[in-house]
Amino acid sequence: MKSGDLVKYTGQASAYKGRVGFVTSMRSVGIPKKNGVEHKTHAMVFFPGLDPDPRARNVDGLLPRLGLHPMHLDELECLSFP
Image (tube, rainbow, N blue to C red; front, top):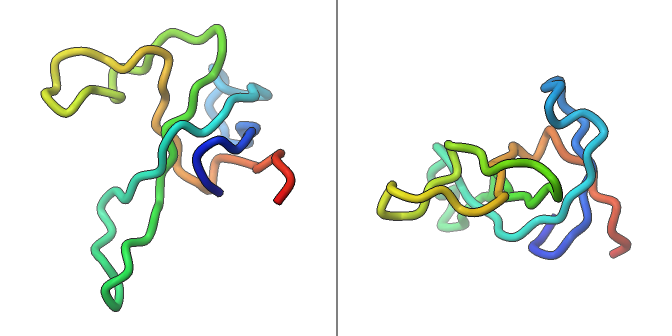
């Protein structure tokens, strides 16, 4: 999965069930580098029509990023072609 991919939410949260969005960026959360390689574990996803998630804060921690939702990669199915 990479930035720009179209994704579908496949997790359990009812607010996101069946929603389709696109990945805006990839992040590593709580996982250190392994053998010098950073492993991406989360994606910031834009879901049209959903309010911003309060967990999606700017670096300064003050303002939420508009419409972005932090999602673990296990909760997403990639719909984009390789």
